[in-house]
Image (tube, rainbow, N blue to C red; front, side, top):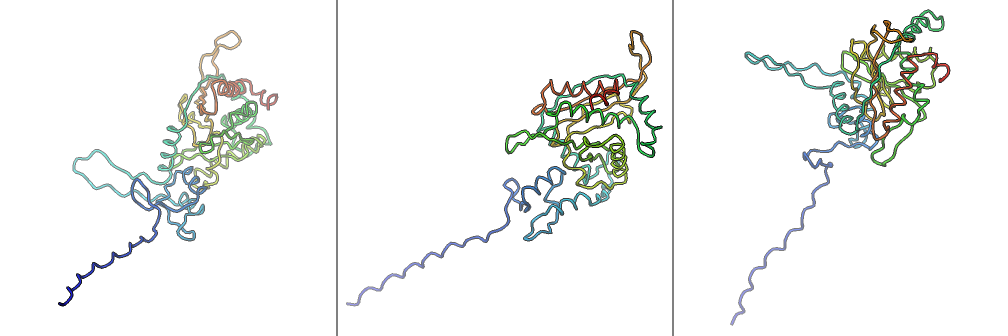
Length: 320
């Protein structure tokens, strides 16, 4: 007898195919996560720039610091006209550029730092007289001399007297970082939107130097020439809402900073002065601070010192 034919053997299973390594994916959206080193990611976050909108120029498609700076400096594209709708009484404008960066920064700050705001109303009659006198000072000739200059100087002296207010919160390392320098931010309204450039080492400047720096900062901002470097590294900020005729406000902290001072409009009001009611020049100050860094006592001391200096500006000499 012939042996039975062997049943055909099943083919051996094919070796599993390993997928080619691809770009890192975002777990929420499934889209490729932009390649960038941690310091570059932090810079983009501070400036309110979405890394996904940046064209990388680094090796291997990595985003560099220069790419982030270029994205900030690039002029915002003109908004595309909305499609006309019969009877429409609304219009939609894409949020881009400086406005988008500012919006993201404000949201990040409001929902990460516990804000506390304190207020004080001050008789600044003597300060306004000093401003008028300084405008005639030859050392300040050609410089921008205004109440904001003395408010800035008063805040710098108050920080010198209460240095722990000048700090930032390091969430990753769970540390408070105390700064031995003051980079003073000045909120500036521009045609492109709100920006907050800062004066580096403002605490080390004389009054004429501070006046010159403030003038340069404002002029550069209005011309749209503020550099990205000038908008990073701030420690405290001043917002002058008084130029709009507003008494005061509850300002939101610039991300990464510990405090922001709102300076209201200076108005002639009845005020008790030396036991008599007299017309005096009065303003209201508001100080918002990060309550993780600054407790009520420290915040109150800073605001009280600013008020005391503006009430009697000679304290700039004795305290400064």
